[in-house]
Amino acid sequence: MNRVTIDGNDDYRLVLFFIKKGTIMPIHDHPNMSVYFKLMFGSLKYTQYDKVVDKYRYNQFSNDEYDEILHTKKQVHAKKTSEKLIENNEILLVRPSVGNIHKFVAQEDSCFFDICLPNYTADSLRRITYFNEISNDLNTCDKHGDKCDTILEYHTTPPVLPVGFEIAELDYRGDFELNQKFI
Image (tube, rainbow, N blue to C red; front, side, top):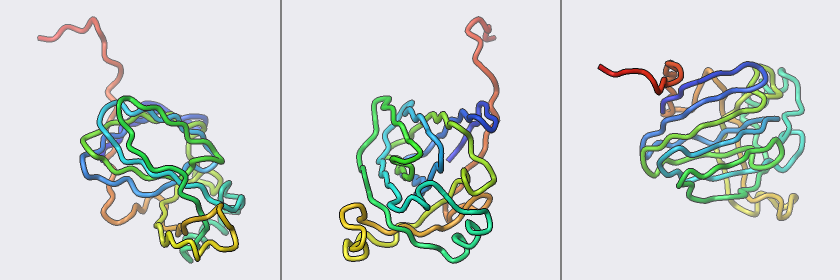
């Protein structure tokens, strides 16, 4: 997968992702952020989840507790809230409390544009985390009733990426000048 960061600071981030057919962008979150997503071209199988318990939904823990959660591979209850095919320039909105965890599988070579508000930070409140789906057995979710239908395990956070997943950062080369002459 290739990523081109167009611009960003603590308040926002503009980024393009280029994902080859068959590539999986693993389950990950956008904690306490809104993300506007637009598919520029291609087709993606999209799966969306929500954490059930607010403490984990909003990353309401210290940096030390976050490190412990990652180290112990904490498992949390979640609900799979959507599974669909994204195509034809579709736009999605990921909000802090809804649809904040998702994964993509490229059905063909694809590109999408993200506007992240605000940007990720190094602290636990807005740090990206990758997850493993441990179970989709309803018996594991009994105490949460219909709010839960799967278990997600905290897996890793950058700079360590999930095994087999790589992101190449490509330079943004500026805006295309329409009046630029080609030789």
